[in-house]
Length: 207
Image (cartoon, rainbow, N blue to C red; front, side, top):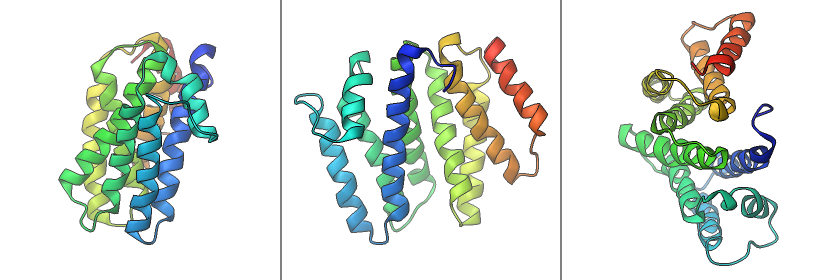
C-alpha cells in the first residue's frame, strides 16, 4: 500500500489489520466453539461502532478514526467475521468457500474502495479472488485448495479484464501478488523480474 494516497493509507492499513486479527483467531483455534465466541465478540464490537464510541482497542480505534469517516459502516465490516466463521464449520464445501470469499474478501475490498473514494463493481471480484487465493495457499486439503484456486482465477480474470482507476491501483497490486501466489502452486510462477514488471505495468496503466 506504499503508493496509496496518504489520506487513504491509514484506512487501508486499518482494514487489513482487522482482517489479520480475524485470521489469527481462526488459525489459532483448536476448539471451533471458542473461535466462534471470539469472532462473535468482534462482530458485536464492530456493529456497535455505528452507534457508540469505540472501546480502548487499537484496531477498533483505528477503524473509527480512519475507515468510518469514508462512509463504511461497522455492520458491513462485522460481516467479515461471518466469512471467517465459515472456516470453523465441520464441513467446508463449495458453498462455504463462496460465502467465505464474499464475506471476507468482498467486504474488505468494498470497504477499501470507499476509503479510496472509488466505485467499481469489478474490483470487488478481486477481493474475493484475493481471499480465495489465500485460502488455497493455506489449507492442507488438496481438493479444497484446488477448488479455491480455480475460483480465485475466475475472479481475477474478471477483475483484471477492465482498467482499474488510478486511486485503486495500490489495492490492485495486493490482488496481483495473490494471483502470483496461486501461480506458484500451479508451477507457473513468473520470474521476480516479470512480477515487478507486471506490478509496474498495472500501476502505470491500470491493467
